[in-house]
Image 1 (cartoon, rainbow over the protein chains, first blue to last red):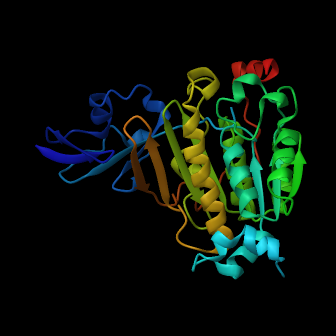
Image 2 (image 1 turned 90 degrees about the vertical axis):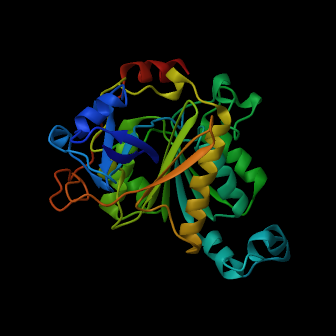
Length: 70
Length: 271
């Protein structure tokens, strides 16, 4: 079991969960449209599959937000 | 700069602030801020900067006021429908504060005009509704070492960050614009009008903080909020070495006009 933080909220994971799996678990609708930070470092999209999460990790999903002038 | 008695009175609540004072107000009065987009975000930004007495406010927007804008674009009034947004905004600013010089650009910001338009300003505020221009503002500002405030709103959410040379830029967080129509715009998905005010006033505060040097800017941070829960979150970020524009080996060395989403353009023509 690993206890991590996702967008500021605690989440418990089975050990050896990858970032790719976490994205699926969190029902991210358009994974291509999300930037992922792991412990304040950006993770390249191609690294999602081989990035395993460990206890205490902090993950942030950053979403595109385009409005303003409209 | 010598303030008149009226000016001292007008700006007294700034001058009273220990961190601002007469000196800080002078910096505001000498300040030049460009507001890109005179819409949901640009309206509160321009209003508050004008009230604050920012000496020179530039506003760039190619659109005219539409009835559907008035739910949130508070600088435009009902009789302004059909009027160019930059003219409508300038008229209100002049009435609010005659100390402010307003420069209007009734056009879209493009790769061609961006460097020239941005150059003479101290700070740029992104109040645009589309990703091509958001990335254009970022790249143009990074290339000129110009600080700017990014802002985005959608439905009940808002996000903002401030760029200053050396800090994370918008591209550090989001490498490239999403494909056209992958992310809905407010005109497609809607937005709670007051969200525009919540985010725009944060952006205006960042501009005033930059001009006066008071406090800490939202650099290396992404502030986001959701108005349904009123949860505000600040995520720490860092400049990315792999950033295509501000990283160690930039691959973007020229400004790019990304293609607009087709429906956005159709929408714009309709307005």
